[in-house]
Image 1: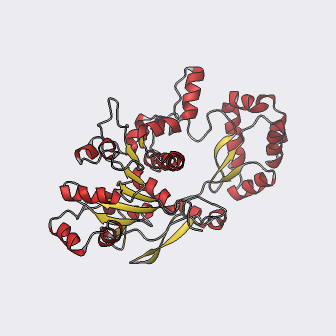
Image 2 (image 1 turned 180 degrees about the vertical axis):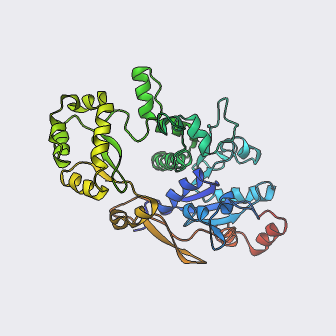
Image 3 (image 1 turned 120 degrees about the vertical axis):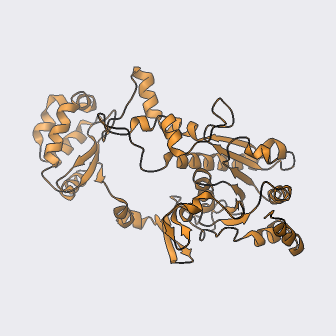
Length: 397
């Protein structure tokens, strides 16, 4: 069967990452996504390299399976085109700076009366209200202001930005969840609603553990490198050849004993300092060097084999090439292929949705700028060839 959102139409007025990531998830779930782009320019992500043929890999990865229409939102005729498309849409998603849609006359309060069933989602850096609301914000800004960067890095070194855009992608995920929830509610009461999603709000949610520790102790958490703040051993270790991780998050003494037996260190299991997670945390400065010395004497695969046989949570630190070739990743189909005009096909990260009765995943290639303009205006908006030519002549589409 087609995806669970089959039959849902989304008008996508987003660009760069947070909004397109949200609508990518909806597309992978089966929704029909109409991506509205500015004529001649399009989504700025189209210009972020590296290029695959004449398209940016950045754009391809999160805009697969969507249709592109170019509309000039600064023209009255362009705004009317958007309104005509809204008549047959279930969801609108936008991620402009707050106030921009109001200037277009397309804000929720201005259109809700005409489209009472519409679910309207706005993604912005700081939300639609508050002292920072009018500020633009990109990923690193909200990661910094939301506290995530303050927790990332070595205790005695510089702070670092996480290697992926968690500020954007987290907001996209939360917005997709909110949209699906609103669609469910609409199924009960027949009414749409407005969703105000702040990237900063999402980051605050993402640092929940650090907040809990701060509220509990009054101490401000900071970067602690490769270890866990409340469990040990739960960190990255360096083997002779490469890094791997161990994650013991329990007070169960049998787990600690199995761990010590697996690495042939029975004296550690008897050491009073390391009994229970609290003991290992209290004596972490003693425990960590002991384990680091032990693991430095063998290859990662050697240790991982022993630990997995003992049912200890562990795994290699994979680089991206290793992730692509990981047997479990392959088995789960997490690297998908989409058609590509220059390469024949292109690989992208698949969405993680697995349903018993539905097919999900990339529905097709990423669109060329305005590739579906004529199709959408004619078939979806019901315009005649004459009206479409007029709109193109005046630069409205």
